[in-house]
Image (tube, rainbow, N blue to C red; front, top):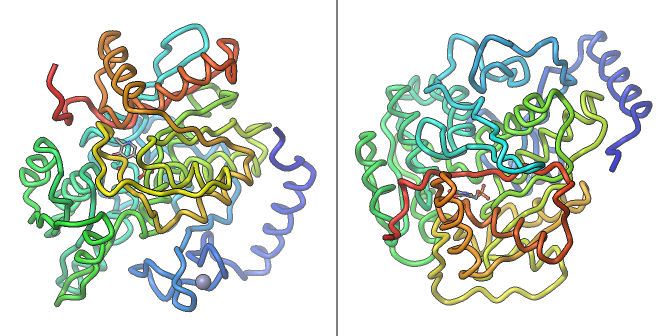
Length: 393
Ligand SMILES: Cc1ncc(COP(=O)(O)O)c(C=O)c1O
Ligand SMILES: [Zn+2]
């Protein structure tokens, strides 16, 4: 599908260039995703007037000439993250992950090979690069809530930045992720009850504490734009027709959509890929909202996909709106399909988390139902490493 006509986008960017020439706008803005109110400051994570999530809006169009071709990390796209100063980048070498051909037209994007073992490092590097000086200047520490991977990632990047981190996690967090967070030197607090309770605890005000929760903070979500840039660039700016990805709190989904939209609006790609949001039967609020169905979450989540736990994600309406806007699709898979997909991937050499196998299970389901074809150029995002799983063979 054509996102916008090239003509229309040239008009938009022509206009932006004019305003810029008049000396008015900055290269970016952080503003409310609902009412466009600007954020109070860099540390804000909610709209100051309506409380809805904030988003980063980059004013400049994407220009392939501005890619730092010899930087084999996310920071090859530094120009498009204008809120980060070069000398303040906090990096562990994240991004530019392999895009591996799996079968004739199917490619895996190996996000599991990021420094802490998941795609979350894309968000942590932009977030921590943007904020660490501010927090340090205030002699503060950072607080985060997470089901595991984001906590490990934030802990690692805080360590790299020389900041103390306090990570709030659900009581049920799998051992390897819990250990990983501790080895990075963060304080970990286990919280009983729902995922919402964990977030509430992390947000409780305390002296010198700066809540930088990855779900709400716009600078984290924004880093995930880079995944779209990489997929497009690795295909020589001829993006695939379909992208499958697992969805829980929606940062990955929103980030990748923003990235592809930025490329399309800048006329770097002609059409947006069809984005397919994959959820588990137990945790599927987006699927239900997208299909106008009522969602009743289980009392207890027991899915093997233990990273996908957001039954009531704060970004839900934004996720549904964005997915509709790009003519995407939502799909749900069941436990047996996830487990089969996880085992099949491992048996073929791709050892990923069961939560990541959700996207492959969804692809298989679509193939079986003839909703996708082996002729479609497809990317499946493998979001996290298998070494994090608690499952036993
Ligand atoms: C391995 C893995 N895959 C997918 C997701 C879903 O990402 P999001 O919460 O941004 O939807 C997560 C989130 O924790 C994850 O850890
Ligand atoms: Zn608002």
